[in-house]
Amino acid sequence: MPQRRMFLILGLFALLAGCSPASPATTPAAPSASPSTSVSTSTTPSPAKPTPTTPVLPDATGALDVSSHELSAFASPSGAIWCAVSTKGAWCHFPADFKGKIPSSKKICPEEMLDVTGIAVTDTVSYFCSGDPTAFPSTENVGGDIDWWQGTGYPKVKYNGFTVVTLPYGKKMAAGSFVCLSAKNGVTCANTDAGIGFRMARAGVTTLP
Image (cartoon, rainbow, N blue to C red; front, side, top):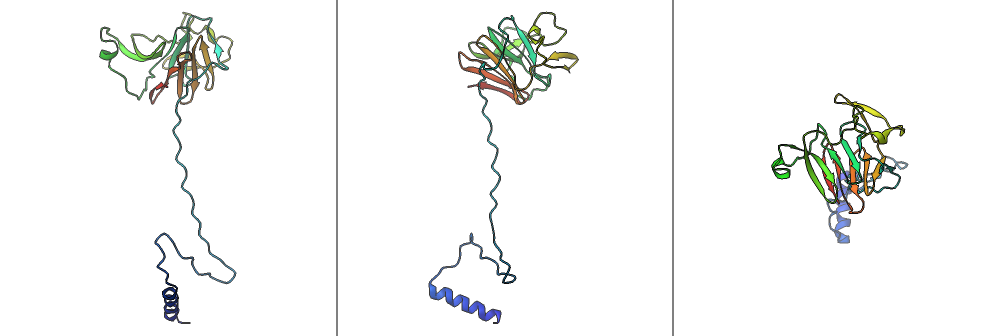
């Protein structure tokens, strides 16, 4: 049958049936290339966007108990983040390549000639100022701050001219109500009694909850 005549007949059928034209969202199926071949269309769903993970306060379950030590200092496995935990609090220093916003020392310690160097959790969560690292997990430290590390089998790494002891990813350490968790997305420390804490990472600081 000539193609023009076929279109006229199809148009007549549509007119008699009172049908309206197909909407733009509907695409007619293509004619079969042969009686034994059919053509179908399918819609592939767009990949789901990853949902940002909300930091969660760690608890002391499975943590290494370092309550018997006056202070226990450790580094992240990269060596970049230095932290410490005691029965009085937990804190972390900003890494050297920190990309987050650091508050002004005029706001945090206006009467001291010191820099804002990190964040701590005690009864509250707050930034602190210091002249030298207050968490120094170097093997050169003779103050006893890395005594907790002896016998754990946890690795040490070279960082910025120092050899520092580390808390491996997925491991926690606790002193009293204070606990710190080492993870690939940063170090998270909490006061489990108060339900508050922070996460320190190269990208920035997150206060919790």
